[in-house]
Image 1 (cartoon, rainbow over the protein chains, first blue to last red):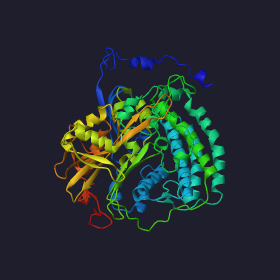
Image 2: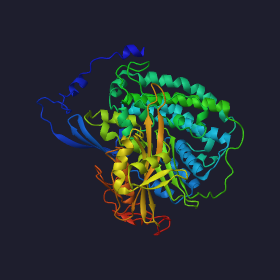
Image 3: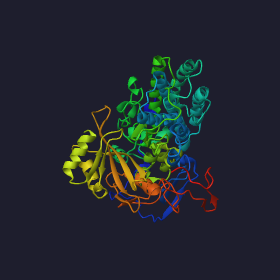
Image 4: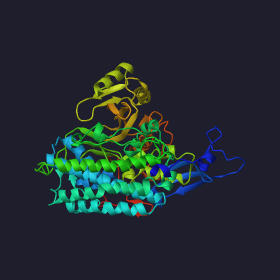
Length: 405
Length: 177
């Protein structure tokens, strides 16, 4: 059905945008004037307090310069004053839509530094939580991206299911957004009674919903028109700007740390790494180009299904046992350092932790995936239409808490 | 290539540019002299044996006792393995560039890896290291009129900013570092 709707038609807008070969847009004899426009810091489609200064010429954006820092909360400085245990809640507040993934990445970094072994059951619980949080995060991304593109309804669908994931998290640790559940050496407490059964029921309920989302938004003609072929990031650019996560994979680069640099127990699971595919491939509308907004969006939709697959395998394999390694109350960090990257919901979340022999790290550096992904904005938002800027920024899926830290 | 081999290659290729090679610990790295860093970076990117095309992160570390600020570049090369297959990544190595705490200058590598642009701005903002030939070197996280560089170990927390009182829970005392 999708095929018939998405028959490609000539796009008068695209023709109008075509230049006469000199790389600049062609306006004929229309006289225009440049204007600087502030988009944000308070703007519904910037997903937080992001300000983008747009140099516009009519409807055309000649240059977009992001200004960040409005949400800077000195996360790295605080890391130099707290013990790693105490720093876990701080990591929640960086990428607050995928707090479990942040807890996970920081915990693994400190475990690598201090040489801590995680019990098997704890490892499985951590992966269940990280993947469920990835789903929840991608649901928010899906919903808000629909909002950006003028579709209000998908948002409600996304939050209906996300609510049930948050209920599961609440049952596990009492919190609905900032969990601090995954901690150094395992998790803070064991799973509650009947949790795994409830989770299995949820997965059965949830998996068909992804197809519903696809019917609702992914193949929607207006949505495809707004996103396909817009904001194309070539694979070369994606590498040059060190993009990671769905943004990198949307450009056709099959690179996922869960597969290519497996950490924790990820090597035990079977799952695919979805990448952006050219238009006309199976299930891809004809207008789509590799690396455009639609590809990035669709990679996330496919990743939701892969995360469900991983969680199902966890449910089959999870053993009984300890949920946390036995660790001293004060963890002395050795005089060395470790740089560890984990595949978060938005890309590679890196932590550089430098120990100096005391319990408090000498330095904690956070490589926020949103920070690096956002830096490509200027490159992509050159000579695009004003209405494409929200489409591009939304498809990068940033969380300002992590950009500014 | 392993970090050891990369260090050897750089030693053979650049006379005196490799100051040190730290291979023990969890973060193997090569220390490069600041004034040679740009040409070494170009070599790392363009040499057919290395082709390091992915700058993962630049971290700054303030070594107060040594009087140095260190920029740590985490590098990697990603290569396609075949149609539909996972890309392969190798040549994971960290490069360290050390400069004095006061008046430190590092050549910018934003023209080698554009990803360095924002990371270098962050280092300038947080540590006060100046990156020569950077396309747009200004503060990134702090406001333009901020005084001082917050991630330096001897940074004094300001007690007032445009009429906004800034205190810590320790009263007028700065936090530990």
